[in-house]
Length: 176
Image 1: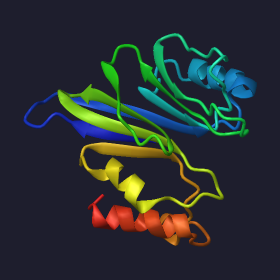
Image 2: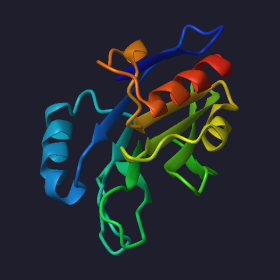
Image 3: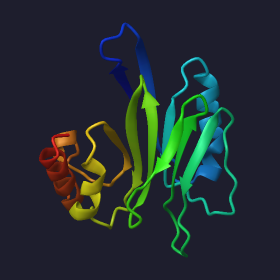
Image 4: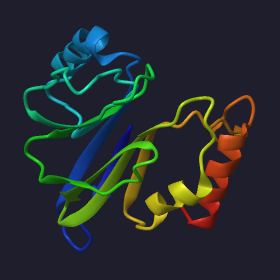
């Protein structure tokens, strides 16, 4: 996935690239990510949003040229976890995200404008909570990405589930 952001009023044009990936176990698939980045070394993503990392706090995970932000599952439940990798050339800070969901919020500056990026993993059996997620839609200069397990025919799923209905309402009600 890549976005095209223009610096209004300027001839400067910067392509900004975001990669989203459900790894289903980052330790076991780290080599795949390394190979992907090596084969695209001239066109690296600026941001890599990874879900289902399955990492625990004691697991070390870093990539050269990227700063890593993580939210691991710290309880006994298996699965989950998110990691957001930001190119080290970008100025990035972690911002507040709802504690009750697996989410990392990052603020970066692109073409002199702040951009908020939320990387989310929502387990398949947990419906999206409208009241919690609406906090992510406050700022219009926001990208929300991840594995939300929200199916909806609007984005070409074969069916619509409850999380898909809720996400559709969030998109409509917040003009996203």
